[in-house]
Length: 492
Image (cartoon, rainbow, N blue to C red; front, side, top):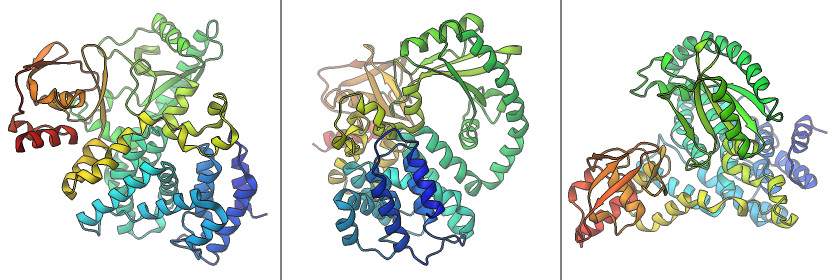
């Protein structure tokens, strides 16, 4: 048996869901034949690439059809197969996923006009709205391509890496796939910002080495602390992804100072139940003083928009050093690492009494509230005829960093970075927007162009008699919903 096929079959044994191994073998042999004689720029046989993509998808615990699509994703575009061959041998679902991957592969940031670029983005969002597995195959494809980026011409290296930072890494984050986002960014970083990458690498090398020794000692103390009450608790350690650190250092409050970044090396406490998360937090604060001005973030009670849940605290650890701790259940950990892909995990859906046939449909188990933004963007395609308007909607409503904002009653609203009280008002209800005359954030009066931050509580000052918005609001409203409603009201 070919060693590549052996590696793929070995990876299938690690997934908890039922996999049709015979179909996987048939798809691999089909792909091997379709790519017969083809070589990658590295000089290796082409079949290596789809095999690696399929292995990644298997390790993400995706279903048989997605893994098969990963094997076949280049057979029509770059191989000797026809779409009809896929349809006949592997059915309409696999063919649709492969076709979707082919369509979004055309997206290019450079070398194309803005019109072409936006049109490709429109295609991608439409395809994603139909079947999210398309983008999961594409992310696995991009991950392996970045791992072999050194074999491309220099211009293509930068183009692919920049495209990754601007489109694919933000998409991975929006889908809650934190680990995949980090991997994509770190692989692209040295190509887009080579000097800054080298500088940061040199700056952090010794810090990471020292931090890992320190956190190993802290880990032993934590395990001893948990053993009597939460014996099943596990403590993992990790150091911050380099590109994430690079972006964090650019924030005004850090101003490039590594001493102000407290999660260079962090400890992660993983337990079985939600109750144990809070029990672990109590034990930690009982022994290590929390840092008063940094506080505790409860993303369990208030999950992030992409579904991320954890407790975050910063404490004075051994030797008085400030350490960040994340506390989560095992299910939350899978969600944090793999986001939307975690919802295809067989072990969880099986517990819900779902039949084997339905398990293979996979996509139906992705929670619909987490896909609302994809469906909203697909709906806007019919309304937003201007390419610039659609591109703005995509940047601010899909790929922008998100903040959680609260109403005085505790209702949670998911808004992009830069959103204002006006954007919040239109998110609450489109009829509420025009009636806004002022706003309080965290109990203090603010201007209507105030940029909301994560965790802000917004209390609007309303005049029920007011019917029309101010044209000035278009100077600072950022969400597509708010801007469209304001423009519509002003026209009428």
